Image (spheres, rainbow, N blue to C red):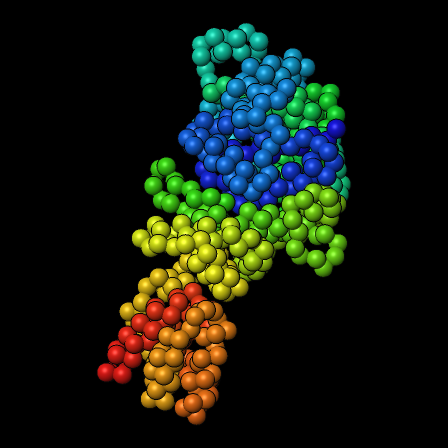
Length: 505
């Protein structure tokens, strides 16, 4: 039975790269009829941020990739917050101590700094706390049992470190990157339990993954250097390691370096799935949702950032992805975060959204702005504007002229297209539409054609001026459709106002 986990730390807003990691775990679980778990790794109490855990859950729910087991949806392998599992980590750390595979270290910050200086001056190959220098430090390997008991009884701060052997080779078999071999002489004796009694990531995630029966660890590339240590820990406990798959980095759009919040701010796109307010500074970071991206867009977009379906197809629903996703098709190379591709996908999914759904959004925005808006009118506005919109709010933003008479007119269009000839046609057209019994787009067009024919001109010489009178703009959606939405009276009123304002300049 496939069991995978997404294990973020609640230290702030969930980076969009974390959402991709969660998505890949979700897709792999669904493809293999497995279980997707959310585990909150909150052992770093100094960086814990109130509200971050709920934000993570809300983000996954918005994307449609809710976990099967989580702090909110308990399963038989809980608790799902590491802060609620502290006794377990102490128990397993003690196992390693009893086997002689870990040790207590009492070194002070000053002693550790002195060690680093000596290693730097000696230009040592490994300048970390390791097999090459541990016997020179103040730990349970160099102190007598009596001294160790005395230090602990006296309340001296200590950590528990793993004891990495010298002159061995550790192999990591990674589904994405193949076999990776590391010499233990290059590794350090990482801390497993901190002086505050909390475990580090290295111990906690190994214990949890084993106890939660995780079969595949799918996580970011930044954890690849830690994989040899984790394999060693599994071996030390006598456990079978899960399969690993380390995902490629998300790169800046230009491709040179890891995507950061600063890059996103500089280029004007979000880095978080939902709005996030920094609790320390109060700074609000706009999320993809609030920017107008649809969850279908984000799933499709993120899936293709580092994974290849094996063909040229680019549009995938979540259901389709769950059927074809394979870890073997994940790339080693970093993926450029092409926000223009996200915009293109959003246009596709926006146009695929039922008109009545989009119309409800337009109606709500209109009413919030103080305008009455029948659902039929909203649907007509959506039909006219959806093909010209990237985000759902664009429909309202670009269609406010349906509710407000223009207070200003595009100067370039007025200068070039607002002619005496056009004004004469508009006057005649305004008088003729009074006869309309069924004010539909085609009927408006027939009367406009009648007016231009009667005055001996063409539609192309008049339509820019008519659009200017109705919307104040030089471009926009189908002009006849606009008049159908506005109706005869409003169309006549706007023409008369424009003639009055523009011909008296």
